[in-house]
Amino acid sequence: MKDADWAEFVTPEEVIMAGEWRKFEYPLAAFDNAPWSKQKPEKMALPLQGMKFVLGNTANLRNLRSLTGEVVARSVCTFGKGMFGPGLAPSGARGRVLGNISGTTYPGLVASGKGRATSVFCAAPFVPRELLVNLMREAGVHRYLDTTDDVVRADSRFLVIHTKSGGARNLRLSRECLVTDALTGEELGKGKGLSLELAPTSTTVLELRALP
Image (cartoon, rainbow, N blue to C red; front, side, top):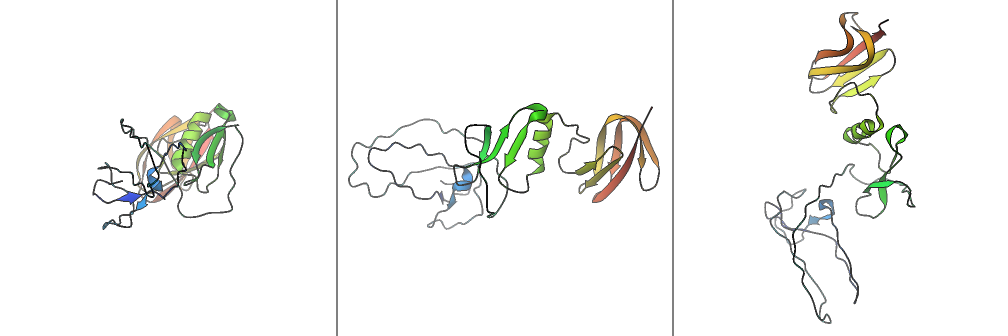
C-alpha cells in the first residue's frame, strides 16, 4: 500500500493452498513499513495513492484470474497501545461484536442488551471517554456536560469538573437545584441549567441543594 507521501506499507505474508478461496480484510493498523521503503513513518498518511498484490512461489499456479471493482473505505476506530495480558475474550454467539483484538479474530469489545440493560465487555484496559459517552447515551444515563474532554464526578450533593482547556460550559442538572461554589459558598444560580466559565487547567467543586 502507498500512502499520501508515497511511503510503502505491507501486511504479514500469508500462505494460500491450491484450490483455497480466501477473503482478506486488513485494517490500516495491520500494515507495517515495507522493508524496501526509504520512508519509515509511524503511520499511514491519507489519502492512499495505490496498492498492489505480490505473489511468490507461483510456478505451479494455473488459470489465474483477476477481478475488478471499486475500493470501499471503511472507518476503523482503535484504542490502546502496546501489549497487555493475560487477556480474556468472550466466545459464543451471544452479544454484538463491536470490535476485535487488533491483529486477531478474537472479540475484544462486545455488547448485549439495550437501553439501561446494556452490558459491555472490553478486553483492553483504559476505555476511552468517547466510547463511554456513547454507551451512556445509549443507556439513557444523565450527562451533566456535552464535552468529552472534561472529567466529571457527581453524587446527590456534589459535582466536580476538571478541565484542561477551560472555557464556557452549559451545565445540565437532573433536578431543580441551588448551585453554589462548595469552597467559597458563592451562589452561582438556580434551576436545572447553569452557564459556567471554567479556567484552563482547573478543578471546580459545586454543591447542589435541591429546591422545594
